[in-house]
Image 1 (cartoon, rainbow, N blue to C red):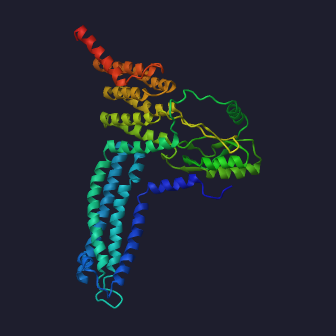
Image 2: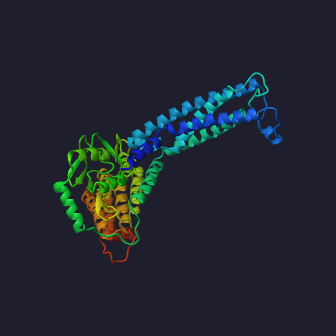
Length: 480
């Protein structure tokens, strides 16, 4: 077997680095130290040489005491501002955790803007400290009394830091807005959809039937499959499917994953099923290699797990619908984004769970993500919590209609189940007018989802508008 590090472990390391507040600032601090050495070398090289006039105009030309004062002032202000920025960041994290949910803290921690701001202030502080030790009382044949280039660069970094502070104030205010948070999660989800679901031209197949070979292998695994278990617990952050396929081909096995990324692994729980069964020594060796293909950690991540991103948006919507917050506009924003995520799946098919080796034999089976599970994950909790909020439940109904306009028959049936569930709870609305409005949307949405595939497509908005006009005519006729 290849001795290279497993992709799952590497992806876990990269994810931890992306979501850390220290990694980019550390790189910037190292860069500041190297920059101080470079400017020191330039200052030493310029000793005894006359600088061009255009360079001399922009470089520092003061005395050593003045240079120390400038460097000390910049260094002191930078470390003070860095402390303030850290405090503001912690407050922002606390507010985000209480209002939008702790699972969204990862998005704030992985924000490149916040990391770069912290790194800029700390790096400028370190640069000034390192340059300050190069300021001497008198010059010599090998060194200047004032490192003019270094001091000039320190002043320039101070000016840049002032601009970065203004950017940080704007950025932190923008990043606390619900629309910005939901949009950030959506962009991450869009990238995941493009990666996990290959795009297909034309209409997706309504059903996926198993081949006889696939059915026989699944039955044999259920009947005779051998379990390989985990030695720890935690959420599966990533699975190295390529390495598992290589293991299956090397040992002439069929491997079926028991869990998917995002699932929680119990101690000594099954990770995979293998066929045919192995002896004790082979089982021990293979188990160690299989465990290396799974990256476990204390929390879920969006890597290889599209459901996690959907859960993040749903959590924001459910919190917005709570009596303590009561923010239906944020919930409607979340519904719009969830509809956009499901619309990305149009003309995309769920990848086959069966992966073959070079000879064409099935070697690896990965549990697939179903369209039904994604729809239920996106809409069910919002529907359950918005039963008595007319504006939100109406927006949810309209969004389902818009999602189903270009979907296949089988997927429209899945969406229709959500509409029927909404219809069951329509009586929970206190206002008769609100109930009529909701029923109107439900009728329009059902018209879109129940139409035959051969019928010409009709916009859900047009259908809803038609029913709205009809309701108004009936009200006029009845004298309401």
